[in-house]
Length: 150
Image (cartoon, rainbow, N blue to C red; front, side, top):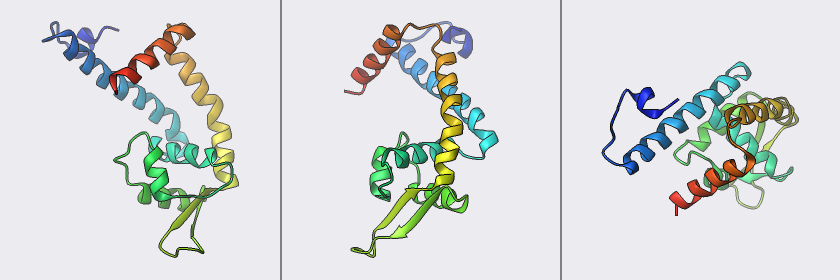
């Protein structure tokens, strides 16, 4: 659906304003779809992001700072997110033996099982979201977004 219709805004100041609003609107739209998918599993999109980061560590623990650096939303409170995941049994949180001020976080088997359940659902969501684009068009969109952030 056209942005003009969604926002009930027939004219934009410039193509750059339209692109900016379209990017923000589409990002929020996508996050709402992800949040809806995750809701039955009682985790937020930010918690899901932390679990994916930890899975990428392939069993090696990682500290909070490194998690924060890799998050999609870097303004998230990683400490709070990790604590919520720990209370659900999805991650472990331990003091580093070499540096007592450093906390190391790792994903648990329960966390991995949850990601295994979510992987096909997320894949389906991605396919449904981009069904009107070819693989080349999706790559072009991604490359264009990378250029916007340069």
